[in-house]
Length: 164
Image 1 (cartoon, rainbow, N blue to C red):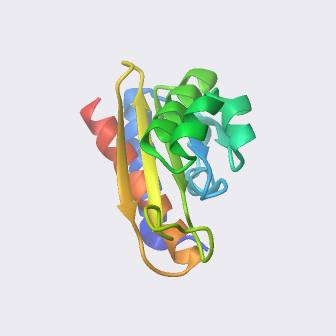
Image 2 (image 1 turned 90 degrees about the vertical axis):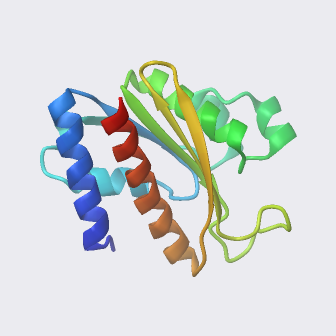
């Protein structure tokens, strides 16, 4: 269940995108479509949200948003190069103005010493070809990590939309 905070964030983002006439897309791994779910909870989201990519597996990252398998092999799926490639690929595939990508370790298993449970990489790509990445280590249960990831992704999208 989405929190009121997440719904408010998605609503605010939608208002910004609508005012700019922009479209947004997502490429999601650890959230499994949760960011897209939050965005489409907003009435009228079809004006600024067209599609999303749930790229849970490495194969999906390559096939759906064009991530080079060599990048995944050398850096791992939870890495800056992968989320940047996911965001770029999703933005291009959806012909959107803005894209967010997430890949992380939601837990409770799967963590390593250098990528512990709660580690999430975020990638943002805009229509000017600019990309940036952010890494956050969240704490809590799997559900809490995923909800915090959704919220942070919406914050990053708002910032990028306001700056663009």
